[in-house]
Image (cartoon, rainbow, N blue to C red):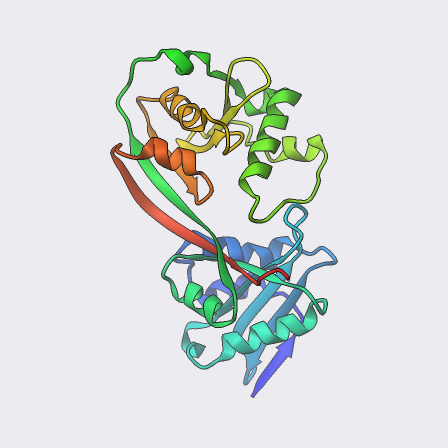
Length: 276
C-alpha cells in the first residue's frame, strides 16, 4: 500500500534509494529536494510497506515564475508500476490549484517519455557541443571584441547580459528583475565576459569559463549582423577547446558552428505544462 508524506528525502537516503545519478539533469533535479526550502516548495515522498519508492518536489523560481520547476524519481525496483504518475498527481494536489510544472530531462530518456505521457510538452532543447578550432587570423569584427572579468563587469555589460537572456527566452518570458539580480547570475568569479563591439551599446556577449565552457551570441536574434557577431565572439577565443552551450533559440550560434568540426556530447530537453 502506498503512503504519501509531505517531506524532503534525507540526503543519506537519496543514493541508497535511487542510486548514483547517471546524467546531470538527475543531479540537478535532486538538488531541488535539498536546496529549495522557500514557502513555494512542495514535496511528496511515497512509501510502500515503509520503504521509500518515489520522491517528487517542486518550487517556483524567482526568474521564470510561470511554472514550478519539478523533479520526480522512482526507485529502480519500483519502476514501471505507475508510482511516478501517482507521485506527480499527489504533487499537483499539494500545489496551488492552477500551478503548472516544468521539468528538465536527458533527451530520449525514460524521464522525457514519462513527462510526455503525463501531459507535458517540449519547450526547449539544449546541446553541449565541443568545438576544437585552430587559431584563426583576427580582423574585422573580431578586433572589436572586448573582454573583462565577470566580477569586474560594468553596468553596460550586465545590461547586455540581461537583454541577451530576455531576448532568447521569448518562449518563456522571465520576470522583471533589478540589475543587481542580473549581475549575480552573470558568471562565476573566474569567468571572462566578451562583448562586441568594444564600446556600448553592446550587441553581442559571451561568457567563457576556465574549463572552456562557452555561452553567448548576439544580444538580439533579429540583429542583421547576428551571425557575424556570433562568429566574431567564437573566433576571439580560437585556438582552444570550447564546450558550447547551444540552446534551441541560439540560431545565430548554430549557424556560426555550421561546417566546423564539432561534436554533440550531450542533449537535454525542457518540457512543461501548456500555458493558457
